[in-house]
Length: 512
Image (cartoon, rainbow, N blue to C red; front, top):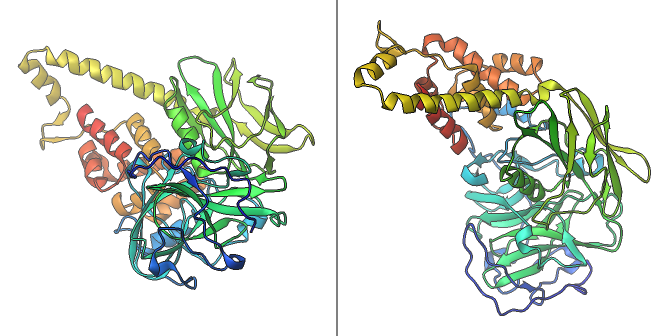
C-alpha cells in the first residue's frame, strides 16, 4: 500500500457532535492513520476498540437472520434467490449489479441476506450468529462475532466534497452504519472500479467521519469488488482510492422521462459510475426537479468501462434533438448538481439510444424504447385527473344538504349486506403497483395469499416489473371478487413497511 503523501489536511479547529441526519463538515485527519503490515492487520487511531485489535477469521457458514415478512415460507425465500440477478429495483434502493466477468468472480462464499427496508432509505439487517453476511441490496459485507441487528443507509458524497482532494478520489458508495461496534469485526465496502490486473499502483483507504473530524484509515485488504476495513467506530464511512494509472469505472446509464400533457417525448439521460451514492443523488435530484419524471426501466449497465476524460456521444435512431451531443466523462460523485443529456422527440415513436465512445467508436450502451415503456405516463395523467375530480367532488359534497350527501354515499353500498363493494379501479391498482418495492414477491405470497405458480405465470408473460406487480394485484382482485375492497386490501398490506404504499392505501380509503 502506498503512503499518504499528497493528501491535503484541513484545519483542526472544527469539532461537532454527530447526528443521524446531518453531519458537520469534518476535518480531514491523516496523522492518526494506522499502519497495516502487508495489509494483514489493522489498528484504528484514537478510537480503537479493544475487541477489534486482533483479526478474526471470516465465517461463511453463518445462519440467515429473519429480515422480511415472517409469514413468507422457506420456499418463497428459495424462489427469491433466483430473483437476485434481475435489474429491477425500487426507488428506495438504487443498486445496479455489474456484469463484469472479472468482478463477478469474487465473493462467492459469503452468505447472502436480504435486509428489511425501513423508511427514508434505511436498511435493517438481522443476523442471528457469528459469520460473514453480504447484503443483497447494497453489496455491503459484514463480519460479525455474535447475534446483532445492523442498521445502515446510503449517504451522499457531495457533503464532503471539500475534504476529498487529489490524489484521492471516491472509490464507491458512502454509508452510515449503526450497531454495537463490539459485535462488528469488519466491513467490506463495494467499490465501483474495475481493477482487472491494473491494481498494482492503486491504494485504497476508508474515509471515516467522526465527531472530531474526518480521517483516512488503512484497509485490511481489497478485492476486485470490495474494500475491507477493520471497524474502529461507527459513523459515515466509504472507500477512496489513489492511483498512478488510469482508473476504469463500471458505468451505468439511467433514463427518466418527463411527465406532461404534450404529445412529444422528453428524456433525461444520466451517464453515471455504478456507485450507489451517485445513483441515489440522481434519484433525489430528479425528485426535487420542477418537472415530474418517471424512471424508464432499461438494462442500465454499460458494456464497456468508462474512463475519466474520455468523450462519449449519445446517438438516437431515428434522429432526435440531443443536448449536449457529446460529453466528457467525469466521476460526479462529489458534485451536488448532476449533469445529464436531454433527448427530445416531437412525436411519440419507438427509437433506439446508443452511447458511443468517440475515440474508438465502440458502443458502450444501447437500448430500444417503445411506447409500452412510457405507458405509465398516461396512467399518471389519469391518476392526476381522478385525484383532481375526487377533490372537486369532496368540496361539492361539503356544501350539499346532509340528506343529499347521505343518498350519494349510499349508492356505493350494497344494501343486501351493508358492506361496501365498490371495486378498486385499474388506475388505483396501477398506482399502488408503482409504489411496491422489491419485496412485492413476498407480499404477493405472504400478504395476498397468491401461490408461486400464479406469480411465475405472470412473470413469464411480462418483462416489465411494474406491469407484473399490477397483474399480481389484479390476480388478487379476481380471487377476492366482492371482497376486493380498499379496506380489505389495506388490512392485507397493513404490515408493509413503506410510507409510500401506506399513503396510497389511505388515499384508497378516502376515495371510497
